[in-house]
Length: 96
Image 1 (cartoon, one colour):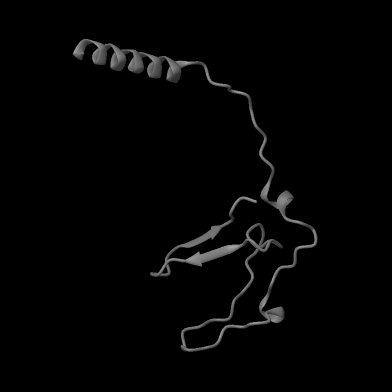
Image 2: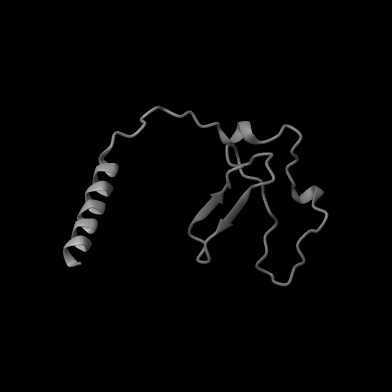
């Protein structure tokens, strides 16, 4: 019984290792640019056309300001944020 178990485990390990070592498909894939995925009809929301502007509950609020290219896009998927200590800015764009 133990011998059968060891043979099965050994066979499984060899099968797994040889499967991992097989040659992978190395064809080059060209990914579309982020800008090419944004529809031309998309409208960038700015402070001037914001239907629901922020309500001020603090004196620390500063009006939003558009960033220069290439970060400022017409896409609705934009999700910029600043870390809580204010030292870093991240711009996240989820795949479409």
